[in-house]
Length: 306
Image 1: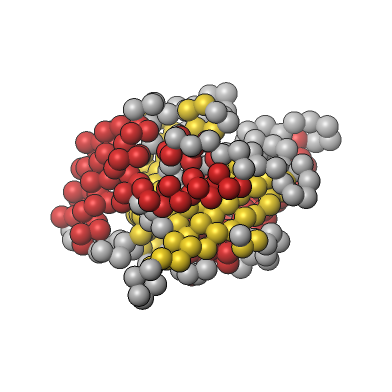
Image 2: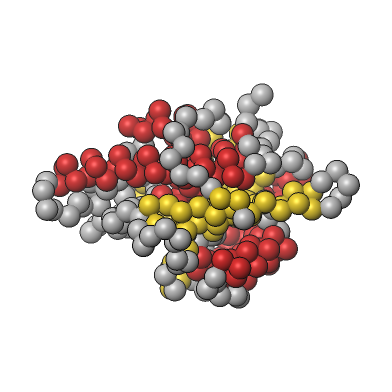
């Protein structure tokens, strides 16, 4: 039985970000991926130069209409990432709602890209759309700490705060929430990043059960682009394979990330030469070279159940 994903994300000619980060890994894991490119750029915007086009909400509608007219608009998953236009985001929600009417079991995986480290890098008018329209139709959400705080209006200073924020996000819609990175202190050293996850499942008797996990991930001293898009795609894949086991899904997701990043950083340093800082082109994710790790990752990071 094929499993089909509609991925609405950015596209770059050179490198790995958005759909380029998500499509290959999902295909390697057996998913059919239909991509709508929200932008088509020469490369990501971390390079000195970039050129390209942006898809409008009307153009998104036209593409979706074409799929619909051919009656091939049946999907098991929708995956979305960076969007910077309010009407585009609202159109995505309309499409998700229509696809859910055709398949009530559809799972919407949303990476609510709003900003990081205390500052927003999308227009502020997107925040109310995420809160009132996107979250109610999303099943899986992958914010960073700043995005989780923005969406709930609550600051995270402790693990208890993070659990409360994840519960608030559950109440807004998603059953599965993973805070992909936080500023919380690691229990074992400064060089570790803390990620947290929470999954709410409804038991046969109608009561809910919540599994919460914590992961400590080695920090890497480099600026990568496309890692958040890869994370959301891998969480989609591994929650599909482990639908009631967030611990296993997150361990596999984070282990894939670790292998891809380690391979990327080691290749980048070799290319840059001793003592030189790698360029954006040298730091493009080594995705194809990581095919085997994507298919069956060695588990190098274990999650703790809270």
